[in-house]
Amino acid sequence: MKKIIIIVQLLVSIASFGQGFLHRDGQKIVDANGNNIILRGLGLGGWMVQEGYMMQTQSFASPQYQIKQKIQDVIGEQGTKEFYAEYKANGITKRDVDSLAAWGFNSIRLPMHYNLYTPPIEAEKNNEITWIEEGFTMTDNLLKWCEENKIYLILDLHAAPGGQGNDAAISDYDTTKPSLWESEANQKKMIALWKKLAARYRDNPWIGGYDIINEPNWNFTGTNKNGCDENSNGPLRDLMVAVTKAIREVDTNHLVIIEGNCWGNNYNGIFPLWDENIALSFHKYWNYNDKESIQKMLDYRTQYNVPIWLGESGENSNVWFKDALTLVETNNIGWAFWPMKKIENIAGVTSVTKIPEYDVLLKYWKDGGQKPSQDFAKKALMKMADNYKMENVTVKPDVIDAMFRQVQTNDTKPYKKHTIPGKISATHYDLGTNGYAYSDKDFVNYKVATGTFDQWNKGNTMRNDGVDILPCKDAGSNGYQVSFIEDGEWLQYTVQVPKKNNYDLTIRYAAENEGKLHLETNDLKTDSIALPATGGTDSWKTVILSGVLLNKGSNKIKIVFDKGGFNLNYFQFKESKKSKK
Image 1 (tube, rainbow, N blue to C red):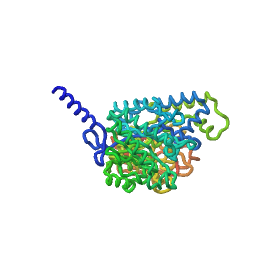
Image 2 (tube, rainbow, N blue to C red; image 1 turned 45 degrees about the vertical axis):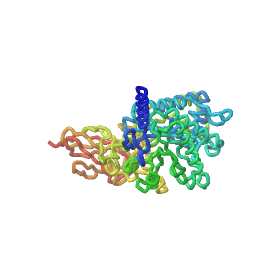
Image 3 (cartoon, rainbow, N blue to C red; image 1 turned 90 degrees about the vertical axis):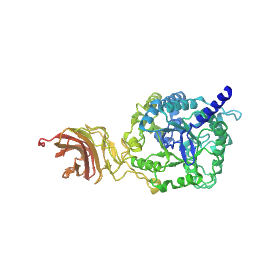
Image 4 (cartoon, rainbow, N blue to C red; image 1 turned 135 degrees about the vertical axis):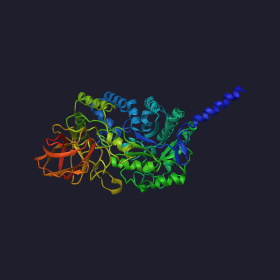
């Protein structure tokens, strides 16, 4: 009897543990207790798979293998190994995952390169499939950090054996070798890799799912090279079915996530579905944030009774982020934005600083000329690798605010604490969306919908709002200035004032032609003040607006540009000599 009780308890324990995984419940993704889960995630782009645009090499080396060739040319094979070891060690650490959890993310999407887990087919002997421990160790470490933060890790095969798309940079596709679709050996390797991963992680409930192939974009029968006009997608379906079958041989716990052709969105011929614990991923970039933009996926969800997930999105303005996330969360769709780190990343949660020495390498790689010394190149690349550490990146509070707080409210909050009297940098306007924290005429990019690239920030520095920001060399600046100011635009600043008083406002600006602005605060609107031409956009002068009444406590000050065309560095409040008694 005792043995029977123990066996029953063991079976109950196994059954309970089996419910501990994210899984499909009709059209929802739910947790162990059946609670609806909205995944709020970030893709760790650039860590395991480098893409040219992240490294600023896209014009001459876009897939990772080409980037590696350029690096090897200047620092040799051993130097290249040392660089990549440092790059990967710094790229994602426990501190990164701790930060993501603190900011509000509950999941991470890991874009994996197969060659960290298994060699390319041309390196195998006798059609064997062998394994490399590096990728598994990197994944193990990341999973441990995720567990400690109670966030889910979704495995994403971003670069499949041979490469799964004609958009070569995404999957590190080398056109001189057989692609995934042209090689049975590559497909067998992909299937074996997923089975190996599933066997390793089948018992871990913090694995949120297996995103089995990222953004396939291949023409099987159609004329569009990226598979956007495919009607059957037979090879893609067959491969995903085979991968799922291999996973289920060793793992019946985890959610399997599939993607369509044409960068994940063409599901023609993929249905009917072949597994009970499956979800559909789609990717969304540069289109309108209306229900029509996701209607096809909503229809799939209803028709096939399956969850849908926005597996990749981003690369746009904060306004677009707020609107996109509001749209999908309102429709009970989780998401993973892109990417975590890239060089000079205006639209990401962090940005990697580029050093001047790296620009020297970029120029040589692109244009040729005198080759930098190996010592110079090695030092430059190792410094860039060091800049990928979380403690060395620039965290972007405006992006994080847009993704989490602004989705919930239109209220504004200070970018940083401003106390009057005091100096305020022009670029430190409030956190919030267009029309509330600032007003700018160009603030979003809908190029997929409009057919034209709409630049939301002409400066592409510091902040990801519509406000145009450039580096500033004027004395007393924070390193940045507001530029490309147009008539009628405005900025708002929340300031703390110790006592009700009249203040004089000093404005630091540069202008080729006369500009004008006025202030609005506490139901008070000042007269418009002229900003005379200074002799150029880099020639800085000051003007004073006198007698601005501010109340004790928190004040929201709006600077309205009646006539634009000038650059704004900072403004400074001082107690007026004619103070209100």
